[in-house]
Every structure is written in structure tokens, then in C-alpha cells.
Length: 238
Image (tube, rainbow, N blue to C red; front, side):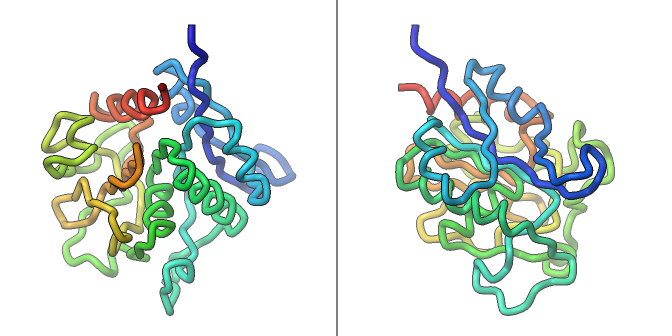
């Protein structure tokens, strides 16, 4: 019997004295549980940029998770920084390093929410720094109802990896972001859009499996979310 694929998850980093008086890492169980349910082995990746290559030696695939922070605008050439932008430089430095390594090594990649945004930046794209100030008649992308419920729908582009995975033209998703992809990097394909025109998903066909979604499929709002994790884990197997 073959060994289960090993999937690395990036962690969030906090300094608030809630869990501990000292800085601490965090990750919701449903992230790792989503791949464990598909027979994969999940491991946590501390923020050590200099060790990114060693971590890549240990894992078969990478999940870049979301969090309540933003990609530093200077990384995509923005001259100004919106007042709402908050950053976590060490986390971003590590995620950049391990993302680039995973792209070079052709390891399967799944970017979720902020992870999708960073993936786009690493691939040469730019971001909208604050949707309400940039998109006319924008939907409420930071939904007030629970994340276990849908916030809006997204339209899936025909012929994309996401369309093949979900088998759907439109799905309901949750929404917890104030930033989004502005312009895509070279070769990056938009695979999902919200009704207000906000980009909700990207993929990189030049890579065996490289998918980013703006919503949080680890909540499994619909069967399409579960299919994303199933396809991702399948891509990790020989």
C-alpha cells in the first residue's frame, strides 16, 4: 500500500495575548481536516524563509492559507498603501519563498483567500487594496453572516481546471476578504468571478496543479468545495 501524500499548510502568526502571552502560530482545524478526509497527511509549516527548500523536501504539495492581513503593496509595485492594509512581513516572506519553490518543483499548489492573492503576486500580478473603494456597486465581500453560510455566488469559467473539478457553471461561496486580484500575472487564467466583477479564482495552466480561490472551501459550503480538496489530493498521488 502506497504512503499517503504529505501536504504542508502555512500557518497564521499572532502576538495577541489570547492563546499565549508569547507569539503563537494558529490554523483552523477545518483546513487540515479537509485533506485528512481525503487520505492525505497534513503537516504545519513554521515561518522560516531560509528553510523553505528543506520543507519542500518533506512535502508533496502546498496549501497557502488565508488570514486577517494583506500582501505588502510594494511587492506588486503599488506606490500608495491603503489605510486598511495590515501586513505580516515574516509570514509573507516565508510564503513567498515556499510558493516559488513549489512552482519551480512543480508541486501541487492550492491558494486560499489571501493565499490566492499572494499566488497571483508571486506569478507577477497585482491586487485591489480595498474592494469598497475600487469596485463600483461592489458586493459585501466581508460577509456579516457566519462563514459556514454562503455570502454570494461565483460564475465559473468554462474550460478551466476549476470547471472540470466542480462540474458547475455557478456555485455559492462564503466571502471574507477586502482585497482581490486586480491584474493577473503572465499565463495566469481567471477561473471564477463574482456578479460584481471581482475576480474570485485563478489558476496557472503552466503548472500541473496550481489553483487559487478567494473563498474558503475548507468550510464545505457546497459539494464543489469538497471536490476542490479531492482533486487537489488526487493531484499529489503518482
